[in-house]
Amino acid sequence: LPALLGAIAPPGGSPQHNATNLSPEELGNSTLYRGPVDPANWFGIRKGFPNLGYIQNHLLVLLLLVFEAVVYRRQEYYRKQFQLVAPVTETIFEDVSREHLDHGLISCAKYFFNYFYYKFGLEICFLMMVNVIGQRMNFMVILHGCWLIVILTRRRRAAIARLWPKYCLFLVVFLLYQYLLCVGMPPALCMDYPWRWSHSLPINSALIKWLYLPDFYVAPKSTNLINDFVLLLCAAQQWRVFVAERTEEWLQAAGENADRLDLARDPHNPTPNFIHCRSYLDMVKVVVFRYLFWFVLVVVFITGATRISLFGLGYLLACFYLLLFGTAMLRKPARARLVLWDCLILYNITVIISKNMLSVRASGGQRCLTCPPLPPASQGDGQGPGLLPARGGGRHHLGQHLLLLPLAPAPRLPQPLLPARHAGPPGLGPAGLQVG
Image 1: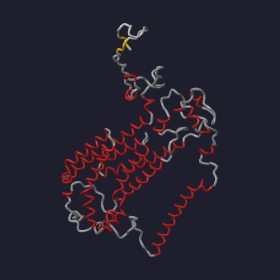
Image 2: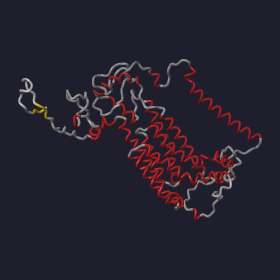
Image 3: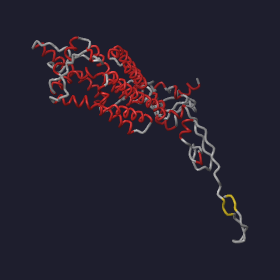
């Protein structure tokens, strides 16, 4: 109760002594204490001039909705006028299907304009998940990393399709939860958050930012929700793809998305032989299917060589291991190839999640969670306050601070022997040595 009462202060005032863990500099930048607060701002109502700057985003959304309605109305009117049937697949080029994919570069380009997301939508969702993790690097994206591991370990497309509705539901609930965190409590309540109530709480502003907690000093960045929204949009479209690929109309127009690994049991192959390069499309296929393997290895090597770390060593070992096989690995059975590739992908995800979890140390969380405060150094050591003498009178070692290692005692260095001083005239003093 005293901590609660101490955290209550009028906006623009100062909290009671020892009632907050904010520093004096942070108090001056906190929304709760730096000045009077208009309660209407929390509801999204604020005074602005000119009015166009206040409503321009709303007008943009309205114009997009009107434009979409006009386009759909115009298409419907045109089809009714000429007695046309709307395409089931809702594509741009209605006369292009899976049968026209191998007829040339133009037909191939038209096919992918129609069905690119149908074929590679799942991979795009994986890229968006990694993008969310990389852009945010806080506690919340650990959940995205866990979902990424769960989905990739399913491997089979049918198993991923059964799990996908649950993942979309998670994204919706998670996005709403993060939006509520960004809104936070209204400052007009004159109450700070519980993690700011006392100095005894082992939490600071950097850790609050990493945990993505609401705060009046370091408010959560609402721009991070844009990446989550794009991921939700891609996941929702992929859900439609999973539903559509089980219908006969989509199978005839776009082809099947089956992940059969053993083609020996199904000798029927609709794709013509492109090894002899009879057209420009065959040349593109040769570049993609024969040399993309080496391009991936180059990317893996650059990833491991540009950042000298333990994680980079894993990428280098994986690159050299795959180089031992060379193109011989492409002639192995499909399952044998995918096992090695799955190991590389899982290692990549492990590195991403590990770096995200270790980023709490970079945000300053180690100071309040693991390490005791540094006592001031003794006077006369020439190091200033907050530093402890290490070996040989040097500064406090960073490893001792992070790992809580005991300080090593300063070794007794050999003292030089200097000629003894005497008060008499030169040349008459007794010969001898003294310790300097």
